[in-house]
Image (tube, rainbow, N blue to C red; front, side, top):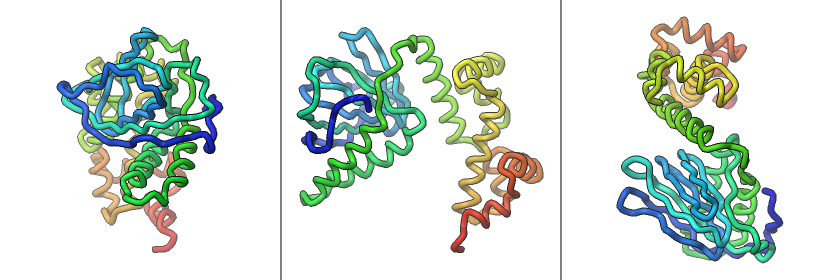
Amino acid sequence: MNTSIQVSELTLGKHQFGRVDQRMKIGPITWPHHDLFWVHQGRIRLTFPDMAREVVLDAPDGLLILPGTAFWGKSVGSFATASVCHFESAGYDAKDFGYLVARPEERLHLQNQIRLAMDLAARPDDCHLSRRIRLLQSILDGFDWPNTDLDAASHDRASQLTAAWRQASDHIEDIRTLSDVARLAGVSESGFRKKHRETHGNSAGDYLRDLRLKKGEELLATTGFSVAEIAMQIGYRHAETFCAAFKKSRGLTAGQYRRWSKPFA
């Protein structure tokens, strides 16, 4: 993180988890301390009036909102769940305001760290305080200043794609073709392919295939389902097609991968 915050300068405040919906909105508020705001489920739209910026967070994702930054927000859809961690830093330059964003490739890891921090905060004794502070420092390392060159259209497109891919991953057994994912985003298949390539720089078809194979890896490593059963659960009509795609992409057969992933079995 591009700030001067050090472990010795951190003072922890509240760490809470809650629900946000159309009736229970966030703010408007301006905190005098840092606010680590993290979305665990659903989507939340945050508005920063002094910056004339708006951010849509698709779980898992979050912001580090700096002291003195005005914001307000609400869920996108029926509801969302989020946590906040308030803290103060003696090394903070009070002239700054705004927010930092989570590094995209580290969001899932950050979510796990934040959940651990919440668990430690809920324990009745204070013996974990120093551990919580060190954990917070590690979490902060996953945040950086936003790319101010990213325009609103690009952000909306990325959010739209992220939401569609997340729904596809959660219901991969029902996704037969790329057109099914495109419908989740509310666009045509050709339009979805174009948006995906413009945003991610690779093929949407390749992305969907890798999504299936990653889910296949998970099931091979953590369940006792047969290869044929796993193929059906990740959207392949035939086990042979799954096995061929898996071997070509991973360099191992499905059976070899299962044995490799369970070295102590």
